[in-house]
Length: 210
Picture 1 (cartoon, one colour):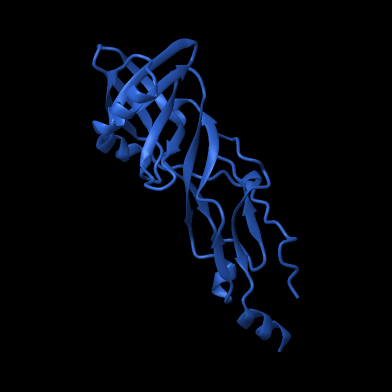
Picture 2 (cartoon, helix red, strand yellow):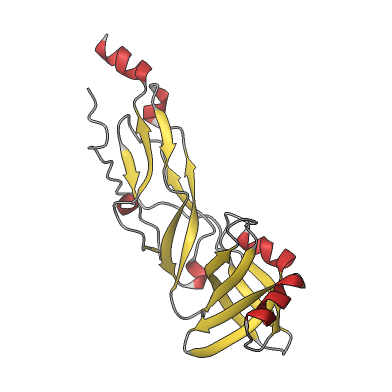
């Protein structure tokens, strides 16, 4: 009988990454620090208050049109943001933290982290599981546990997605973050993070015991 959850598949090959991470241009309007009433007024006018910091710079307060912001916040994709403010300033940034309304799910506030092309960037990258695993071929069920992983790399090396090939994944085995290796990209997520696994089904157990 397969001892589910105990066996790990150790992969020695280097996985291939897809095209480099996409850039998304977003326009912002500089704002002044204000009280709760002014922040509420910003939201009533269809904008979202934002903050940019990091990379040795002073905090920059600005707003983004709520509809435009959804291209960044309501997608499984990750982007390098090319932020263009109405005072002429331009920055490279990544999404750092989001605050949502607990009832309406509208975006209430966004924190951006300034980045540069010559320093590694830490960001979540979507996982794309590919291949028809050996375990599934014999009746197992593929379970995907992680839809993204946190990685670190220079902007020019950041992948758009992390492809994970399951072709050699056998019944009762799993792939964890520590199994993955991508050129010029470091996995920051804990090594024990389960990416995907092939779990025995009742049919495969019955066939094995027959």
